[in-house]
Figure 1 (cartoon, one colour):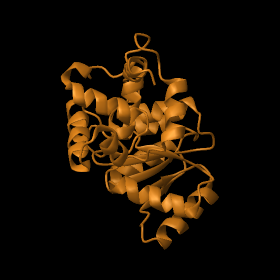
Figure 2: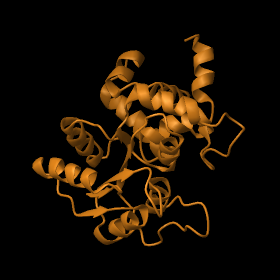
Figure 3: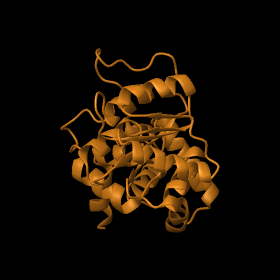
Length: 233
């Protein structure tokens, strides 16, 4: 994995913690440009990305790595170097509009910089398996605060919720409320295997990387608000 942070002590501290858990760190980066270059060179499975760095911040570095850069002056990486890479955002403040933008760009979650060693290791291991790092209470508050209201922004071009079945829409709405697969299964009286199938189909149909992007999309399209009013929750 790669650690990108402009503070040397932070990088070294995280490296020691991760190495002690058998998680190899192949490179460190002091800014976003170095992070993009390190991903291109080493093709890591996970990047710990500080959101605020000099020269190129973590948000734009995330966009470039994941191929979602929005301007000609900051083109998406053309060589596929970001394929399969999972990015965890590092931040000092959880309710940060830049963190929200990074999640919308495809980051798999975020951690506060004062995270405990045990939580850091568990988070990296979780994301390495392809899961999203979704802390329901914090992520929901973050998205509620910064997601544009439906009709105010483009949101996720080409992602039409009409491609989902009624059951898949229901599952998406519950994911956005922070439910785990086990909670979804209990709420809908389904097996966890069936829930996993629904979740996988939702991500595939909407071309989403993981559950974090699903939460963002649900709020940006107004799905959660509509479901809340319909159910009276």
